[in-house]
Amino acid sequence: MIAVELRKLFRRPRTWVTIGLLNGLPVLVAVLLALTDLAPRPGEGPVFLSAVLTNGTLYPLAALAIVLPLFLPIAVSVVAGEAVAGEAQAGTLRYLLARPAGRTRLLIAKLVAVIAFVLVTVVVVAAVGYLTGQLLFDVSPIGGTALSGTTLTSQEIAGRTLLAIGYVTVSMLGVAAFALFFSTLTDSPLGATLGALAVLIASSLLFTLDAASAFAPYLPTRYWLAFVDLFRDPVLWRDVVRGVALQGVYVVVLVGAAWANFTTKDVTS
Amino acid sequence: MVGLVAVLLALPSVIGALPASDAGTPAADLRRAVLASADVPFAGYAQSAGGLDLPVGDQLTSAADLLSDRTTMRAWYRGPADWRVDVVAPTGETGVHADPGGTWTWTWERAVATRTAPSPLALPTAPDLLPSALGRRLLSEATDAELSRIGADRLAGRDALGVRLRPADTASSVSRVDVWVDDASGVPLRVQVFGADDGQAALDTGFLEFEPTTPPAEVTAFDPPPEAELREGQDAQLLQSATRAAADGHRVRLPAALAGLDRRTIEGAPRSVGLYGRGVTLLAVSPLPGRAADGLRDALVRAPGVVVDHLGVRISAGPLGLMLVDGEDGPVLLTGTVDLDALATAATDLVPAW
Image (cartoon, rainbow over all chains, first blue to last red; front, side, top):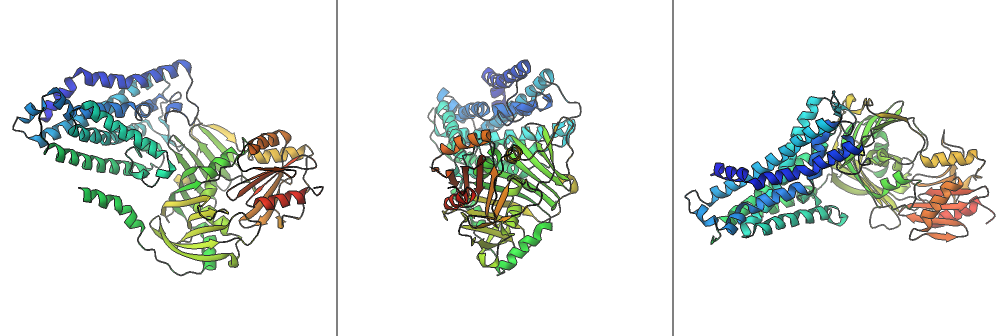
């Protein structure tokens, strides 16, 4: 069943159009930077972007930072929100459940497909960012500079970039869990997607308020940018570890709630 | 499931509420332990939050930001002349590395490494906000009569003993300073500075993680990266202004006392700058060139709560007071941890014609 869901997801043109569009903005930004030589002022704009003009090796990270706040969560919400509600809206859910596999296995298959989409999407963004950085910007042969001013070898940058890809993927799993949970509550994939995005927008807004600082550590978007800490020296693991743990809790609780809801609801469509 | 979530959410509060062990150390002994902790090595992660919204224009931007924002710091401390403090931001990092010859300041966003020689008088920077440095500085001149104990707390997973400083000077705008001291090492773990409003701290800085271990030497050392732009550090813009004004013949007659605060000497400080007071009650007096004073005056007069009269323009932000007066030879800046009445008295002492 997992293979069926994966095939269905990745044979759908819409999936690749989504991934393609997601890469459009970082590529456009890179082209503009390369043509104009105008990087954002220090401390402004997405992280790493002001540094790529002198070292294109960092562009995969800049690309992730560009899509992380909005476009990546939208893409993940659309795909995860459609997982169950999309089948219900299309009238195919009851036929899927007519198979002896059972609801739990179907939900697991949907979950694995969503996780695969998140991973593939993040890897493609980083890969396109790498190619863009190598083609459009100068690349330092000795590696690069950590945020702390120490020199990182090319191997160290590659290793830390892989860790950042993994971290961003984990960060997006929380978004996917919200959308998947909402997807089991409604027959409208749009409603599930918007529900997940509403949670993220609320989280981002509350994070900026000092009055909400008491529960800021529990907001789903709180640690998204902590992948930057992987490029400090020594690596600042504090927020990275907290980010992974927080997303883990959201995924366990929301997928558990989705399972409890999905296995007990009346499926009529 | 709901129960599990509730337990997970409650865990931090439960752990935080665990009773701390109070060793019953007298306040004066705690102060001595703090002053003796300058050689204690440690590594830590700290946050400071300031509520001092100073309307200072371009003259003191970095210091004003420091005192009005939340600042997150990582610190590695091997000794008084071998340490490193990084200010970590979501989009970058500024690290200060100290060695016996001075400091390197590395700013990643600008790829600039600045070498600065030790200065006897400088505006506050992020390393000054580290609880260990700030606590030692604030308690350094406190008398035993100004100190009292305030119980114990658990901070950064360690037992911390509280000591309260209530300054005796009537001119002081600081109502109290609470310092929480690591029972085992004597290093201050948290410092809270309160203005006249005793309710909320005007400045609150504390370690969230603290390890009394010796960091490796390679962590505190700094070699500028190849692509870094190297700069020589200069005195803060305001001190440059004071020196420039003095060079232009604009000197301030600095009396032996201002607003009841005695003048103190600081070896190596610009002669045009006067410092008065003791402990946490300090007042600095400095001449300003006309252009710098104009910018500052424009920022001050637009700020809410400003007092403008024949003495000059004065304002307070929490325990910090700022006043611009027109001296006999030009504008003079008065700033420090004194209240508005003390600033007015100081202005009168400074320009007797009033």
